[in-house]
Amino acid sequence: RILDQTRLPQEEVYLELGNYQDIASAIAELKIRGAPAIGVAGAYAVALGALKIESKSRAEFMERLRDISQTLAATRPTAKNLFLAIERMEQVAAAGEDVEPIKKALVDEAVKIHAEEVEATRKLSQLGAGLIEDGFTILTHCNTGALATAGYGTALGVIKQAKEQGKKIKVLATETRPLLQGARLTTWELKKTGIPFTLITDSMAARVWLMSLSLSMNSALDLDS
Image (cartoon, rainbow, N blue to C red; front, side, top):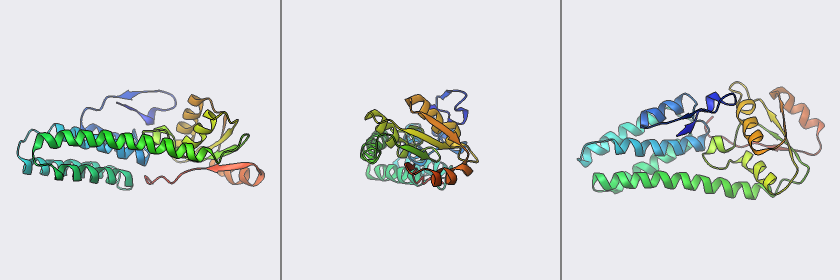
């Protein structure tokens, strides 16, 4: 079950994805976006695909699993997390001897990858929040929150954690053309968490930076682009 990011912020539409083909399409169509989130989705897609393979032959099972992995890899060739997740899933499968135990191991690994992502972003946010001082105005670019990570968020997670620590902060969010991840997604997350923000055009960022002595820049490297 995923939140369709292409429909935000006007609508909150959840999609039930019951097979790896649906997940692959959702990634390709940007309904799932953000490299960490894509990686988690890819892991679950491999597991779902494996569960639907009917062959009891290990050789046939592995061949079909490779086809599934290739289909998923083609959805977003630039998403490093996707390839890392697929590689982990393939290694788990290769270590197994019988089909049914392999299927269970793949499901367990997908859940583990998801849990690791949640824990990693939570720890990152806690550490990063220590750099945010009370009264800061923070400039953000793109979207690096829970939507992009299937967890707590990276750069935006730092801001959310700072608020949870009681710090009074404000955010200037760039629109992030051409897909408007900042205007559509970051502002949606900020509103959900009650953090005051102002949406600005991308071209305003440099001017705002020059005029603001107490401005902190908050962004993150997204290996999806």
